[in-house]
Image (cartoon, rainbow, N blue to C red):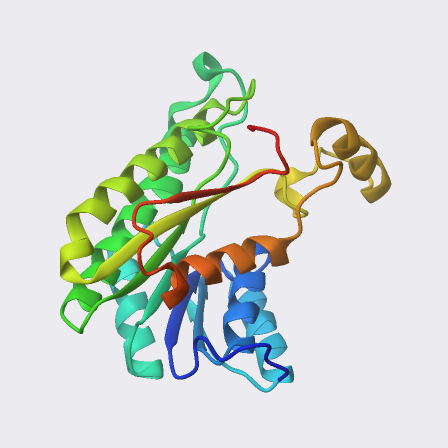
Length: 256
């Protein structure tokens, strides 16, 4: 595995939602910089693919199947990360869904609850157990994946998602203040449109998406998952030791 730095050599990292997209890119980026990585998610096959990609480059990874929205799973993911990798130095909470599509008054109650359960309560449950381990073992870093949709902007038909991510923003800042004295440093990244299925419209081709982004994004393109990963690693590294409760917005200038 070719490494540009060894910022995370010997470190143990847990990434949720790591079966594809941003989570997979984050897991690969940590492994390239020397970390041992636990990749968590609900689909075993996708996680195995992420592990295989890490191992192809000479890195170390383990797949952990579970849902952060389940309290027992959230605790188990931390416990198994520690058992397999020897600790938990960094956690990245990326698991989330783009659901509850439709006008606020028309979203079914069960769908509203599903989006909040995964995006908000799942992040809280994951942090609850991550923080408990880290503060008992010398501290660590946590990076949550929020969104520009929520605190920074809204969009018609995506109210449930925006509410969940705005709440993740407040949760992150509150936890950062509560736990920095415990040696646990917590920050977040808020991506705008990133080149994943979540930013594509139904039936939209890659070329159509590229044309749309030229008009929608001031920088003229969709963001790359590797750019989000780079931001996550920066916030998790010693370079950001004085950064607490920050929200790093990556949206190509949309909310500037």
